[in-house]
Image 1 (cartoon, rainbow, N blue to C red):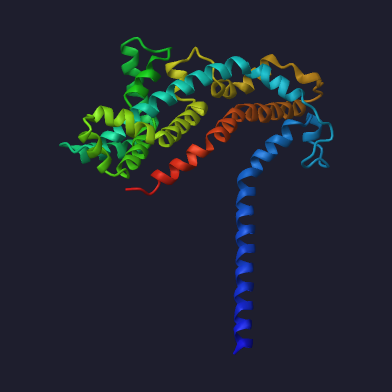
Image 2 (tube, rainbow, N blue to C red):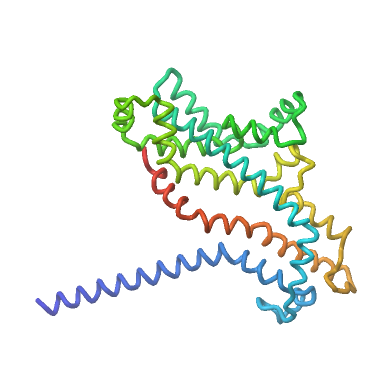
Length: 307
């Protein structure tokens, strides 16, 4: 009997070990598929045009250079663009986080006529393509002379009607629905009104959710290239300059000290500059995520399944 039990335990341990190895290999493969394009961009950004067409060069460049990043900073007008983009994204993120928290709190804690119908419209708003809303919003702002400025972004953020605000309202509603109503009742007994309950209790406890909404809004606005050129065409943003990078390289090419003997060399140089520019654009987003990761994970745990 003891011998049989030992065999069964050995088989179970072997099966568990094989499953762990399979999970590890499976997750590692998925991570490689997701990260490999970024790794290729990183490797390419340090190459010269000759390395790009050298068949013996796979990952590590033969002629390591940082000149590509210097050229990318010049073509992107990086420091000016990153300042404008950061200002726009921060303003948009803060306004949307606050307004969507207010709307989500209203849907979660108050019962009024048309509550469910309005929330269904919010859910529908989540799946409506932004291109459908773009034209009427542009015409409305143009009729009031608000184009070519930050006013449209302020108004859309304050009213929780900007793109993807439906998702942010849903996240806030899910969080506030999970808070016991006894807290509201205890605060009401102490003489606190609905506004005081929201500002003094709910808003503070919902900080991780608001940080998540801010991050979502910040990241989307950082790479957004539909609303910004229409509403604020004179403001240089990283997404806009990255889109016109090919033209800028052709008209302002400095060459980074390279001599182009053929069109193929120049095309290789364009690819390398685009890789370096892309990394410069996403680098601030990685820093923001590292700083706010704790709030993001905490909010997903609180709002993902609650309700």
